[in-house]
Image (cartoon, rainbow, N blue to C red; front, side, top):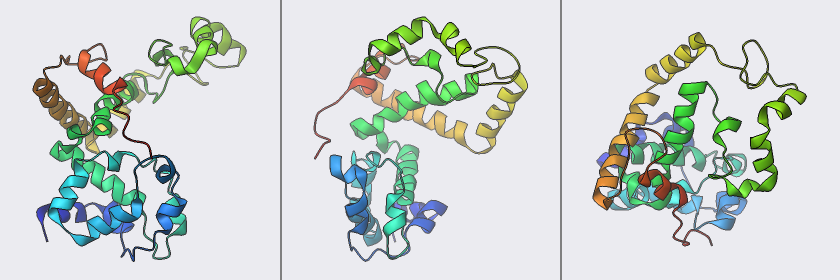
Length: 236
């Protein structure tokens, strides 16, 4: 066995997700991502099961492992009780740890997710908050969202939200005590370590590409590059 397979084998999700693929292809037949992307969970399970180090490394550096939407349709249909979605989780984690995610366009988006969503959880207690979905960054939301963003307090008050206020209710201000607890959870579970790892490898890639990257925030060239880049080769 090689070192990459051994490291995958230490991930409980890998152990739970790959009992023994017989290459039937049912997972691919049911997979929504396979309809739109160059993505085949059957091939991924077969590749990992081969324990071929070069092929596993190629997977870790590829776009492929970032196409899965983790809907777990594969789990519901596999006759051997495999869960390719779990295998993908393990592959993604190892790709992040080794920095291989920066070799692919979709992989580099981990930096944008970490900066825009991960840090927002630690700062506000919310994964997605209306305040961070700006019309400039999300033009796909259209003119309705542009109007909502300009009238957020009044609209949310009419809908019964406790927007940015103390107390209970949706979109309330999260107390410092709760935010501290969230930060502690991220610390003890290794999430902050993973955040640091993503930052370190992303900084190395930005330097390699000669692109400006700031120590924090989304107002930098590298963030916008990974946020908007699309080479047009992902779809079937």
